[in-house]
Length: 573
Image 1 (tube, rainbow, N blue to C red):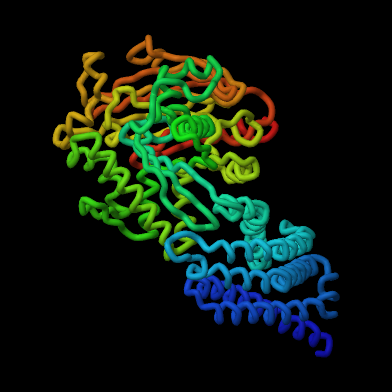
Image 2: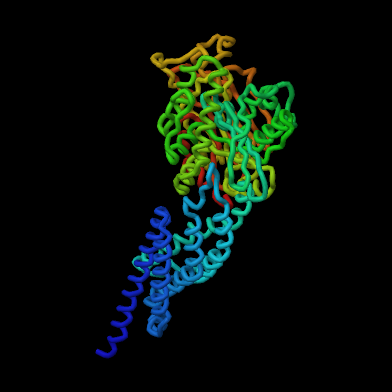
């Protein structure tokens, strides 16, 4: 019987360890709930409890019985795994929890608000000071966990310890990025002095590569977190008599001659860095002021934002909500206001109202983060800053919109749609993009399927119809689109289907950011669908996984990448 006593004691201790870790996990969940409620007392209490629970569990696994049982073949591997994870949890909690609780306490929504609109930067600056301590604890815990070979332990044990590994995998990189880039983010918010940004609203009803015609812009001024609205402009606020940015002849050959002189055409290029630099140059030429950055969104982004902030009401009495803002801005405005001047006033009013709603604060920070992440995932949100450290941050989080020049990290294909009809018909555009591969031939084919959903019953004005359609002798309800394909870096374009567009004289070829490009013009009558495909041969050697750039529309674009492409773009293929 005495020989069984150590086994019984060990079993009891293992049960206590399991209970401690489970309770600690529950308390961590309570911390996040308390953060949302703004209950600082509860945050501290839960934090203290987590430290107490993990300290108790850590004391148990450091006892002599755990040392003995960890030496038993096979059983010992599982015991040692639990022991190591418990010790790592304690390391993490002991090192990170006090600083983490303090940081969460300072980042309450109320503490971030400032009277008159904007963000109180002090809590964020305090959070920045806490991050090194938190990241040090994560690093120490990761070093302990790396000794656990999860392939040699029982599934039931692996299930029990997996939450900590998941936490490390998901949270550690984010915290490191936050420590690296929060100082730059604070500078963007005006911590080191006043900043001026240009906010572009792309109108998806008239397609351009990165979304649509820049229907309106707003100058956003930021100084130590305080936000104010400056000049509001439209496509006709600026001169169009000279090219504002120098580009190689092979790039200029891809676009109409007015692309880099006309405000409304800067978004024809899918390379957002070029677009932003063109806006910066135009702003300086017009007002003698240099911008600190350019931000681009579209009405679908507004719908995501309004879902978080709640609705706004504009001057004409229209109530804009998450569910109706896209229709109001991309379609109904043209039915209500036949003149371009009235339309521009409406767009400016919408921009100003939504801006002031966001600047007023009071919304859930995490919900806004997820709203903007959704917008970014749908390729509707791009940023460009003039300072290198800030632009480096944008590059890292993937909001730069810069066309890739290497296949090392990703094998990027791009297929874009640009309205040539001078219409507002693309409110009715629905698209999907697919990428397929032939492993034997090492080819990659990128296709875009475009549908014109305009039906005879749809109410539409002459202003929305295609202006240039008559020159082609086609109905004014037809799309006229320039479809532009960017092959992956270092890759030629082998073929296109159809071989030429509906106007062969409008076919263009050239190079942008070192990428081979071809553009063809197609007509899509109301109620019809067209598919355009381009094929390229991939080089041998290591290629990053396939990624796709495309034109966001008024609705979500479905993007699919075939399984065969993964075999071609795995490392060393």
